Image (tube, rainbow, N blue to C red; front, top):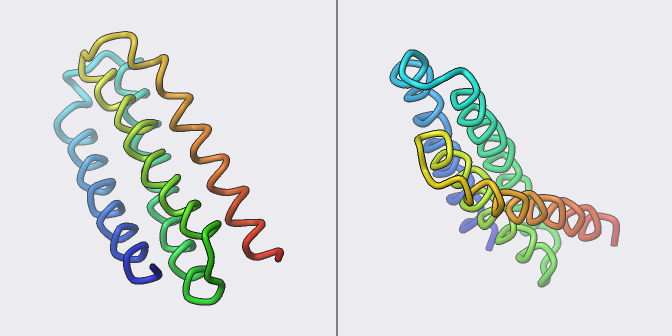
Length: 121
């Protein structure tokens, strides 16, 4: 699992950097400031959790078990739901996307808690 989560983290970081560059160079003058800020929040949390996936990979190499695996998949899910919903919302997607964003945030929180528990045990 360590190699899988390291690969997913590296790929997520690649996509995060690409989306950040796209926002800075392609969206800054095309989106209203509030929508641009929403996109930037998505990129920020995307990158935090790409790095979190690298931490999961390091933990999985040392401590095996279902909690470390669950933490990794919760980070992946959170990136897709939290950041993905913000990207779509900022780009003019339906307003109901804002209602699912907290589900991704909750996945992030639970993932960090599980990762802490894995290391603590």
